[in-house]
Amino acid sequence: MMKPTQLRWFRQVATLLLLLTAIFAGNVQAQSNLTISRQPDFSTEDREFVPGDTIFMKVDAQDVDYSSLEFAEFRLFSREGGAFHNGPFVNHFDRSYTAKIAVDDLDLVDFFWNWEADIRDRVGRSFNVKVFLRIGDPGDQLAGLEMRGLVQSKGNDSFVMLGQEVRVDNETQYEVHFYTAAGDPNNPQPPPQGPGSFADVQENYGVETRVVRTESGELVAKHVRVVGPFNVPRFLNISGRVLSVDEASQTFVVRGLTIGVTQFTGFGGEGYRPDGTNGGVSVGQLVRVYGDFQDDGSVQAHFVEFRRAVRPELEVRGRLTDFDGETFVVQGFTFRVTDATVVERLNNGTLPGGGGDGGTCDPNKGECPPVCDPAVEQ
Image 1 (cartoon, rainbow, N blue to C red):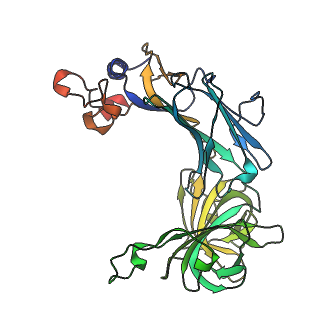
Image 2 (spheres, helix red, strand yellow):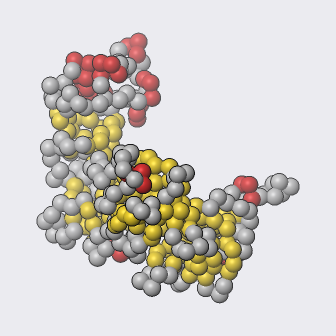
C-alpha cells in the first residue's frame, strides 16, 4: 500500500501527465510491447548474450504515428562508454518495429550494456525504452581492453604503447581528437578533430586505443583515438570475471591477463566487500581493473572496481497514465508501486516536459507536486 504522501504526489502527476522516467526493479506487470530475444521468432525473452548470438529486437509503439515517422532507431552502448553501436528499426506499418544485430559485430570492451529504443513521429509523440543487457563472455580471454598512453615507436602496421606492440589492420578505425591543451596558445584555431588514419599515429603522441587479443596473444586495435602531441596519463582498463586467484603471489587472472596487487592498490565499487586477501577478490567475481602493463606482460593494478552481477532491467520514459493508487502505466508498461518505491521530484518545481500545457508548474496554484521529505517518502 502506498504512503499518503506518495499517493498525493502520484495523483497530481497522473492529472498533469508528467513525463516520467521509471526504473524497473521487479514489478512490471506487462511487457508485451517489447521483446529482446536470441530467437528470430521472438519466442524467448533474453537479457544475456554471448559471441555467436544475434540480438533480435521488437517493439510495439502504440502512440507513435507510423505513417509519419521522424526517426526510429536502436542504440547499444557499453556502460563505461567505450563502445557505441546504432541502427534503424524496420517499420512494419502496424505499430511494430524490428531490428537485429550480431554480437560478433560489437566491440566487446565491457560486459554491461544499455540497449535503447528511440522512435518518434513528426508531431512529437515518442517511444523511448532503455533495457540493461549483459553481452559477451566475461571469462573470454580474447575480449577487448582499453589502453591510453604515449606512442613509443611506430612500424609499418603496428605501434608500441605501454610497452606493448599493437597491430592495426583494415578494420581498425581512427579518430583525431586533440585536447585543447595540445593547441598552440599563439594560434587561435581550435585543435583538430574528426576522422583520422594510421598516418596520424606518431611517436610521442598520446593515443587512446580499444584492442582485442588474438589466440596467438597479439593485440589488435579496433579503434584508435589520437589525442595530441603531448603526454597523457598511462592507463589500462579491462573488465571481466576473475578466473583464478593466487594468494601467495597476490595475483588474479582476468581475461587471460595476470593482475598483480600491492599495498597501494585501491578497491571499491558497487559489489565491493572488503574481506580476505587481494582486497576480497575471489573466483567468479566481475571486476574492472585499472592499471599498467609490466615488462613481463602482467598488469599492475592501481584500482580494482567490483561490479554488480545484477543491474536494473528496464528504464522507461514517457507519459504516466492510468494511475489507480497501486499501479500506473508508462509506454504500455504497467508498474506496481510499493512501500519500497522511491519517488523523486525533478528540477525543484519544474515538471519535465513542462507539465500538462508545456509550461512550468506554479506552486501558488497547487500545480506542483509537494517537495519530497526524505524522512517521510523513503
